[in-house]
Structures are given as structure tokens and as C-alpha cells.
Amino acid sequence: MSVSTVKEAKEKITQWLSENGHQVKLVDEDTHSNFHFEIDYPLGTMKRQRIIQPKEYPGLIVLLNGVGISDEHKEKISKLTEDEKNAFYGGIKKDLMFHENSYDMNADDKSVIQQIQFSHEFYFDSLTKTSLFRGLLLNHRSLLYIVTIFNDKFGVPAMPTEMRPQAAPTIQ
Image (cartoon, rainbow, N blue to C red; front, side, top):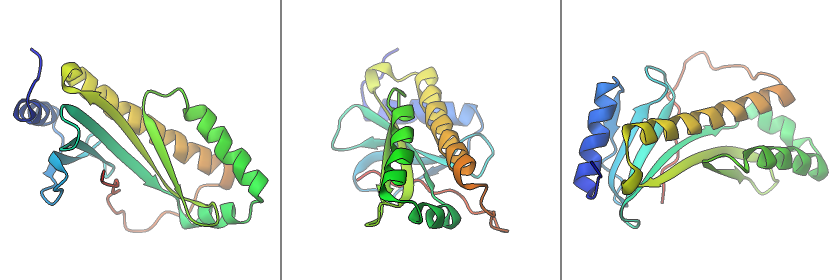
């Protein structure tokens, strides 16, 4: 059965997340969306993804997650030459180019990446439990790819002693 309204989409997504046992938080303060959920994905972890239906784009569902670059990695990136930074970032961009999700690398004024956000978008006409969870998986795999690439290049950063939930940027 095809989804055609915001209400139907919200109800189906809520049902599927509940069936799978996800912790779901409704983000009420987002005035730019018809609904905005923050969920644990993978299930039962501190990692978070967002499921958003932006008011500006009727019928669109956006899945978001992101990763902040560790201070240790940012410090090492800042010591690279512009050519070295461009080569490193270019390799990442080439690897991500043909993924089914999108990415946005946010850098400071010295070309040091601060965070990377992943998004997967689809419309109500393809909203199924499979498409929802496939999009969440694609975003999660992209996040794991970035963590692996940065750790391989710059070493595993020291982890904080207190784990904080990972916050994903909101769509604007």
C-alpha cells in the first residue's frame, strides 16, 4: 500500500521503528519539518540518525547522520600541506561518489574538515520498511567508512572516558 500523506508516512515509520525496538525521540523544536525523529541506529547503540520530512519538500523523507572529526585528527590534518589535504579529501570524495547516499564535508577556513554529514533521500512513493532501513544502513556504512579512513591515516584517537550520544546535524 502506497503512502501519500505526511500522516501516513509518520505512522508507518513510527510503527516500523517500534516493531524493531528502536529508541525514538520526536524532535519538536524543528519548525522546518512535518516530523523529525532521532533514533538509535544501529539498534541499542549510542549512535544516532535522524528521519525528517521537511515542510519545504512535500513527500520527501531525509535520513541523516554525521560524524565529528576528533581533535587529534583535526590537529594532524592541519599539519598537512594543501596538496596533501586535497589528495586525502579527493580520495574520500572519489570513494563516496557512487554511493547511493550523499555527503557534506564541513571544513574551517584552513581547509580542516570539522564534520561530515551523510544523507539518504527518497519520496513517499518508495517508502517501505525495506527502503527506510536500507537508507539507514547506507548512512551507517558511510560513517564507518569515514571513521576507518581517518583512523587508518591518522591513528585511532583517544576516546573520551564518558561516552556521549552522537548528534547528527539538523536539516535547514
